[in-house]
Length: 275
Image 1 (tube, one colour):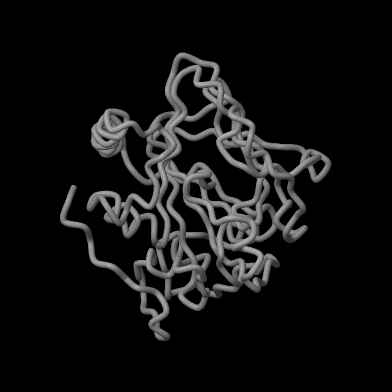
Image 2 (image 1 turned 90 degrees about the vertical axis):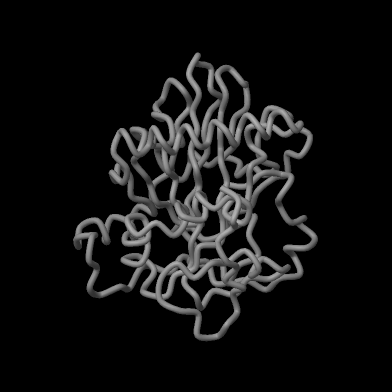
């Protein structure tokens, strides 16, 4: 997912020639994913319920995020505006490159992995904002479409506080037509894939704090408004193989988190000193 403040215009994206087909994982010897889960990712477009951090670790991460959020709100930002955070915050950079997370990503994408995105999606209690059905690939000037998103649950995410919802198998339809919804203040994003439920029955991506899900950049997904009295915060971490090309200067965001970047396309910025 993206945020309107950080999304290239449709006109700009229209100048980028992109391969917007799903590319199944072809890794032959995964180390942490078994054959069934590899097949499930290719078939359904996502994996979920993967434990990464224990209760103490995620509590520490949550406290760190609380501090970032408080400073962001005090400066006039909102709970969705903390984007490309790995270029500003050292501990977010560390999460992007965390070996427990990257182990799953390299099983799906291969040895040469770029981490290029990090965005907190924090739905405050009763904030009234939904995330409409969309495909991540619609927002990103990357080609070919091999990127995946990790969604790290900082808070418990369930139906009551508006967890993400996936439409399994929708990534196989390729890039779908969407409508612009830039004037809809109740929608966090500015694109909507109309009639998405016709592609299949949605499933709720319920996660305990410290767990992750992983989904394809072409998987149709979204979430409802949080009508509960509990916050629902997740950190999205974005990855792609090193052979993916990024246009419009987006290669400046890319960090080599495993293997190498033989072509030198990605800028591979150092860890920020600010934590």
